[in-house]
Image (tube, rainbow, N blue to C red; front, side, top):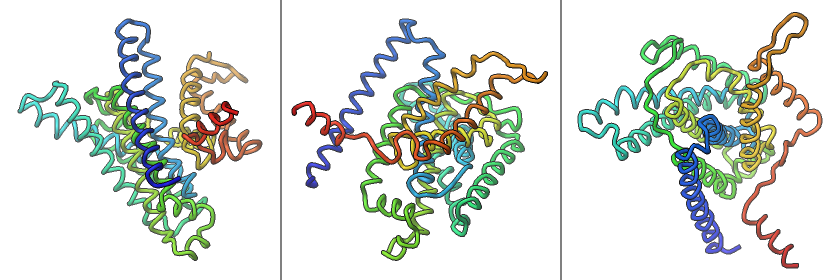
Length: 349
């Protein structure tokens, strides 16, 4: 494929995605106003988008670069709390003084400012974790990231300015379907382009064989830090959008359970497959919500609530995947225009 064909397909992909987003956004707004789309279903759709951002961002670290991180909820928490605090304590008062608060332009600017604050703070956290973890690999790196996630949660618990253990109330509700899925499209486009770029090939080389990658001139240390910072940045954006969608944050939202759920999405979809992460995020989010409706089960005199059964479900899924499908649903395969062209040729023949 020549260079102009490459960019033509990229521009075509972005154009088709934006047209589809605008059409879907209009359809969702119409269905909600007509009462055909209830608030719970809408919430599940929004959670699917947030989980896509989280799974793809973790896939950059775990699947594409081969680093094993299980503290991803910590990056999400940093982005969510920083974004919420920035919009509530800094930007909102400034906008009220100038009469911009509550206007469409003001709300959009407030959300963008919150997203930027969440992305920058989470990136710094990723740098903070990435540099010392360069000496660690495998299980040791996983334990270090787990410790980081707990440090973040305990720190938030003791900061009264953001509510401490009570949680952070009064966050402006700014995240809409359009803004969330626009972020999803941008992140997916950046991730796919990264994989086919020289930098992305260096990521894959470090994952496959770090010593061989260094032998051919790849700076593995720099690549691993970039992977941590990029993945943390995307997780921070997901946290910022989550904070301004729910309007309330609690430190318990960013415990180890949340990191395990994100990790399960990556493993189920296929480590290294962005398409697989998207597919598994939607699938597991829907299943996760469905499990809420399970009745309380009593076994041996002990009552198990639906929330406890959900974690049992995720644990069983991880065990079964490791036994029968270590590569996940899609392995390292991706869906793109090349698949569409293949099917088109098959149809013509």
